Length: 64
Image (cartoon, rainbow, N blue to C red):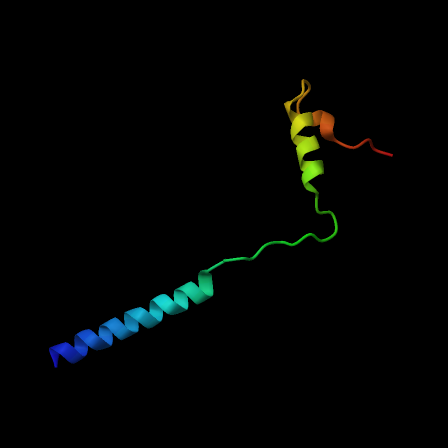
């Protein structure tokens, strides 16, 4: 009886772990490159602009 209870507990634990991995795992998911996504070149240019004297407030686009 003790062996069956331990085995049942292990099975329940294994199922709970399997469910948690399937439910909470985020492997391979990303936002994609939809509208408004930046390219690597744009990100590098932005990083260089941030490093320059003047700070981030100079990065804003002019208001038209």
